[in-house]
Amino acid sequence: SSLYKIDGWGAPYFSVNGSGNMAVRPYGTATLPHQEIDLLKIVKKASDPIRSGGLGLQLPLIVRFPDVLKNRLESLQSAFDHAIQSQGYGSHYQGVFPVKCNQDRFVVEDIVKFGSPFRFGLEAGSKPEILLAMSCLCKGNSDALLVCNGFKDAEYISLALIARKLALNTVVVLEQEEELDLVIDLSKRLFVRPVVGVRAKLRTKHSGHFGSTSGEKGKFGLTTTQILRVVGKLKQHDMLDCLQLLHFHIGSQIPSTTLLADGVGEAAQIYCELVRLGANMRVVDIGGGLGIDYDGSKSPDSGLSVAYGLDEYASMVVDVIRSVCDRRSVKHPILCSESGRAIASHHSVLIFEAVSASTYEVPSMSSIELQYLDGLTDDARVDYQNLSAAACMGEYKTCLLYADQLKQRCIEKFMDGCLGMEQLAAVDGLCALISKAVGELDSVRSYHVNLSIFTSIPDFWGIDQLFPIVPIHRLDQRPSVRGILSDLTCDSDGKIDKFIGGESSLPLHEMEGNGNLSGGGGRYYLGMFLGGAYEEALGGVHNLFGGPSVIRVMQSDGPHSFAVTRTVPGPSSGDILRVMQYEPELMFETLKHRAEEFVQEDDDGCEGIANSLAMSFRNMPYLGSPSSCFSDSDTD
Ligand code: PLP
Image: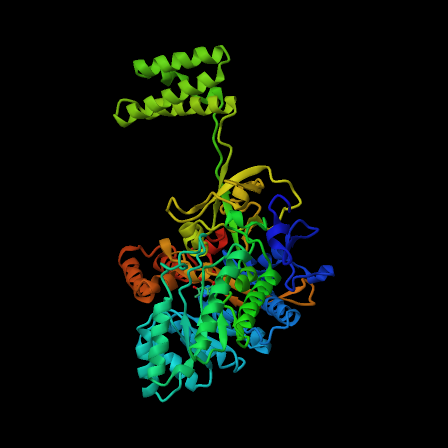
């Protein structure tokens, strides 16, 4: 476990159990072994055929742990409750979950349900997001906030005003000054008194990876001058009492509490000024940015970790707002945060399979057809002679130089059409042999994984975000290989060759029987952890690979200490084609008619072909097991 730094990034939810498998502790603690869930057992249950008692799901697979989600919410709430109590703060904390982090219906419904006892709400940033937030919050606590951020048009603002009419505690946060005119106009037309917030463009700038939205030149929010104009206009319309919330967001993954304190301090001053100017201020919404530890380093320098935990974060926020408000004799506001990453990241694990590993074929001397080297051009033959002489004298570095020169020269000749494939193959073999003898052969292997990075780990591709990736079993065996992970897409960016801890390869186990699909050797499963926020929401359909299958797993007293409470197979090839406006049913009919026209009626002829085609529309686009390629009895 130390090899993968699991204790650093995984505590208190993930650890290695006595069988050498990754174990999950959904409540963050485990005093008894049965309170740990063995991840490999979950994968087996999910992927075993139905006839063997499994769920017959294809990988990749997202395993969701709602208990982890609940624990994250409760931990954040209790961090604030504790800071509020110990510092004698005069109001309370009620957070919102930014649904953009993970809009999955069951994740959002869980958050509303788990957060209901402490009025936890939702944040929306677009029209479909506000629609889902409105409908989910109907089942929640009526005091829970519905914070409406993002760029808005008349329709979005109308939805937010309708939400208020439906007795949902909705705040329209102005991201642009122009939105105010629409709010004033539409609220009069809809006969509803709006609650308005302003997003301040702070001068405090987060210079890290996720900080481009902050600072004076940031994309979002209102400048001091614009905020003053908003106050003026609201006053003019006799609506200054509607301005009740001040929001800011200095970027995700805020590296230190020092930067947090600067941002919160600046916002607290603006809040107090708004109180002085006569607004009916009630809430400070400090946005997102509460960071998590992806690499276990507890140091902000890597950009993948932060130098604080939930308690330090909450304590700093409460302290700064309390002291600014006390100095200005302003009543302590309700504290709200829009923490997404810190709430959702831990609750889901992406499981995928390595299906084969590249091997470097180093030929033996006897297998190289040396006679072909006689046919080399003169200059190449000189390189070859120099190479042989250096080898005889044991000058290995010189050997490598000549080998490189020989290979380059022969590749050029081959390109010019002056060298045959047999000669090039003999030169390749010779050079590989020399590299091996000199110990310079690149020993990093490529593990081919049944996954699309563009779909499931888009931030790795888009912004170089690293996530902990670990084999979920065999962790009691020392890995003997180092490897990178290549995905299924035909795109050279579809590979993971950077890992936490600054590593360019991952310690991996030799695959048993090469683990390949056709050979049916031992399976080798890997898990990508801490990807429950953003990754599912951002994933694309490059190469038409869709999302993974998803299961929801809760702890139970049963024999495996877990129960699968929801199963959602990943989208089929037909589903993905439909996203691109194709009509799979019509496509199938066209192909079936074609088969009737061209295929001879021998064996099971047309019918067999039609069945295969139908199954390919029904299956997921990922690689299947050998049986699922030829029969659907496993998955139906
Ligand atoms: N609120 C706003 C306005 C955001 O833009 C974001 C994300 O960048 C968040 C909240 C969530 O941030 P985080 O996931 O860092 O908590």
